[in-house]
Image 1: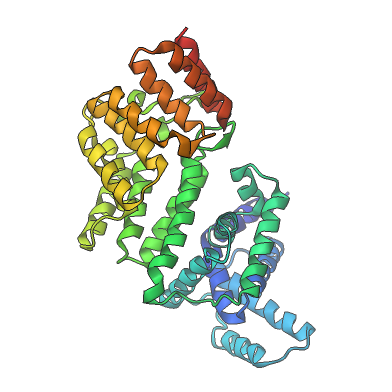
Image 2 (image 1 turned 180 degrees about the horizontal axis):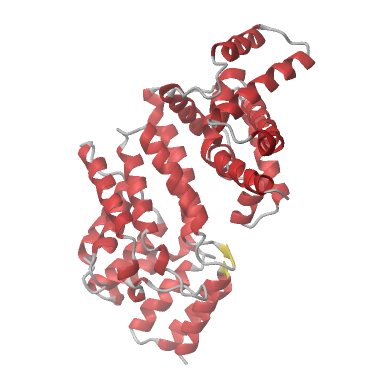
Length: 415
């Protein structure tokens, strides 16, 4: 095998990862069909894999892939004998942009990418479909990569993506950015998808690994892209800040064997200071919009408290409790209350925290996080037998192998 034959597929994969959203978004605008646009883009990638080892990688590979996909759209319509206004429009578009080395029109492309983000996270789709479609067409991940990330069969992801496209087509979802009146609600859906993707990467819900860095980094990358597209949206900037703070600790969240390391025991000298600085600046930019902090802003502020504390003992737990109280008022949930309980235990002791946990336990029945937190608090109170029982129950409920091992180890230390 020649060097080019080995190098080009890697180059194509890297280019696709970076340019996929722009290419599919541009094609969707041109052909007016989201599903067809993605199919055409994939066909262009296949052509690239065949031609680039012979002809060399073009100077502007994204424009090359887009132009090839447009020509395939014409062929598609010709085969279907549908030489209508769309054919003439796309032919005119190709003629007017015949130089594939020509620079991109950043304003137009950015608008297209933003439309693509909103269509991938449209409310007519279920949460799982939004996640799969966003990672597939905006993130440029293959169905195999998404399947590995979420520990489901590749066929499942393929079916979700296909169904999502059909649902969008059946609902006649327009390829457009929501109006200002609708933007807040629709943006919430987009941010929610990115948050779920990052959370799964930060703390895997199942499987053999505790952290999936690649998945979290993809969510961070997409959030940064969204922040560039919507620089005045404070919650977008806040989400970026939250991801930056959380990501800064990834190098220390597991040991060399993949075992989880508690926050108190992490080597803070290995935290990524550049990411923490970027998080601080992103949160400052969000605050500068003057609209107050939303749910992501408050979570980012909590993460900032941890990220900027010199030591675990220096953590401002009282401020974190206040931030959780504000978050509970703005976005009440039993998980927020459980996290507040942990902060309360650090600020004022485990007894008052245990009362909070017991109040929300019924709402999280069957989730391992409740017995896990109760075990910690009961152990601090010296109620060893009860604590051991809680840790064993948490180990039984969790689907993550690494976390199960940690919980059982805690139970064992209690005799």
